[in-house]
Length: 360
Image 1 (tube, rainbow, N blue to C red):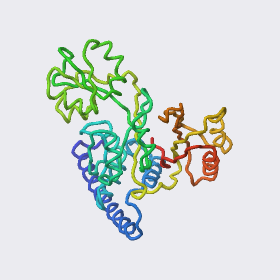
Image 2 (tube, rainbow, N blue to C red):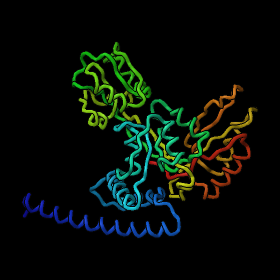
Image 3 (cartoon, rainbow, N blue to C red):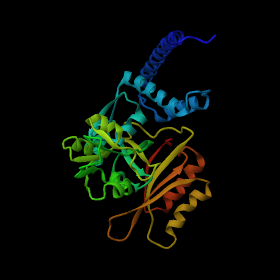
Image 4 (tube, rainbow, N blue to C red):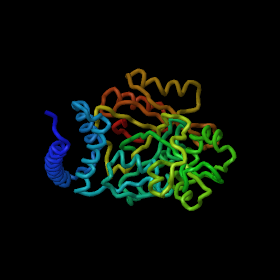
């Protein structure tokens, strides 16, 4: 005989109490781990350990909860447990409602102290100065390519990369009314304007497009004038009391942005191998025939896969370039270590930006 709705709710309430008891038990164990870490000077946050926990749970998940939901739930559980020791101060591009905020919460969970910054430069400064333990910065977009400012800052920053995450970007046209009529100006970050230019050219071709420091800042401005609109996330719309005049106006339905998590080495050393890792480098080579080809040979020789290769002008006035490279693996793996050693010997400039668990 099927249970009644009342009986099912009673069963759910009982399970909820069991879950709460188990969560508090887990929190107590996490607190004991924190005490041990304090004793030996280990960092509270270990991204490779959290990645291993989540991957392990996903591989043993019998369902019906989906793997992505498992990751989200356990990220929040671990975030709440970490906060019992010391909430992490995390800097990212503000104001509230940015995609950077969404990325920070996806990576760290919501039990953090939020340090909202006015620019990517300020995120780097806050993290390097110690006013934030970690920074979250955009690195590349699947539609518009690399975020040049982030790459330029990584070149000379004392910060290193300890993690990454990516989010599916959904741009919405937001304003004080739900209509597309009588819009005089649209505010958004230049990247967002570029990612939506096809839709804008079709639906609002004569409306002025104005650059903002972030999409959320554009939403804040749109909330001050009924003739203005913004391109931003639903989170930003809720934050500033805006209606969605049009949903998902980005030109690429699968538009994603990748973010790097950065910190000082004394805040968190290079994470240990998680089993699914990435190494990021910046290098330059002497300006001679075949130099770039030679640069890639150690990777091929030792069976190391390269997942990204970007060039940026060195700004020396000599037509020289820095190359930003991502490879699969971890420096603790012999083949990766040997490939990196040989690669360094070929370079005029060589800097490891970080070795960290690869994002989803």
